[in-house]
Length: 102
Image (cartoon, rainbow, N blue to C red):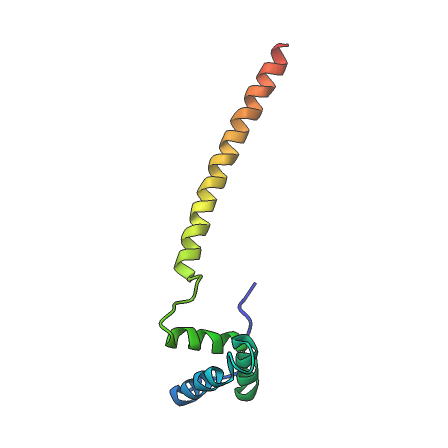
C-alpha cells in the first residue's frame, strides 16, 4: 500500500507561522485545537494533522509516534512472533509424540 498522494505543494514558513498563530487564536477560547486546525487547514488547502504537527513543533513537542520508534517496535514484535512460533511448533511436536505413545 503506497502513501496517499499530497494534493498541495510545499508550504512556505510565513504561511506556517500564520497558521499556527491562527490556531492559537481560535483555541481554546472559541474551539478545540483540532477544530481550529481543521478550519485553518481548510483555508490553506492542507490536511489538519499537518497543522497540528506544526503547532506541536512550535510548542517543542515531538510527534508521539516517531517512525524509528515504530520500526524498532515492529522488529521487536517480529522477533517475539518468531520465538512464539518456534515454541508452538515444539509444543505441537511434543504433544504429537506423547499422543502417539498412548
